[in-house]
Length: 281
Image (cartoon, rainbow, N blue to C red; front, side, top):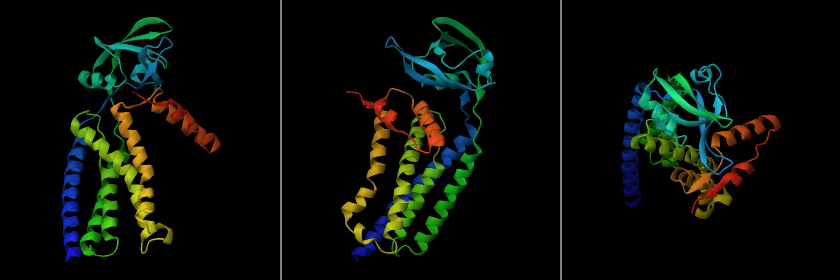
């Protein structure tokens, strides 16, 4: 009786979570189709200059982009767009959205200590990644498989665990940040990151305990240790997004360096990332 009650309660909770995730994914998919981010072809990052002042600099400028053709180059310091002062790299996409795609903007930049205006930079639309549409289909596939197994053999051993894995994989595949910078978009981004960290751990847990748990993994403490790396990475993400943790160099630059090291030597040195990570008091 108690076991059946637990099964009914878990089924009700999973049903609510599934409906909420499916509705959110549907709205997110609609926004992906209707909303396109604006793009000037430049990767802007936050820097600290030699004098200790913060600045927004161009890390990369796509060759033959509108910004490149207008005269922007890597290393340029962005001071303002039109009449709006740019103090953080995050301000750039916000300003570009307000300007709108296929409109022109004037950039005030500094290069080598000389300030000058770069006029008539055409703001383009960021290209839609077809892989994102494919991931939505993959997510629906995960959800269908999970629902089929759970509602056909819900009382079977590990059926609930397998469905939770499928549901989390659905969230990871069907939640995609659009760049609208509103509350719903932030929730979608958080869900995508959390699911991306949790899904591999759930799958590993399932493999190690199906059909029977390994002898060395029968204690709850050892099972909880499987989830420790995902929890630590999630805490780091929350710390960075909330401003508690701060990385002095942009992640895109550190990630590019790690990727180049991985291709060249087969190993990636994460030491620089750890060195740049600090806690703001």
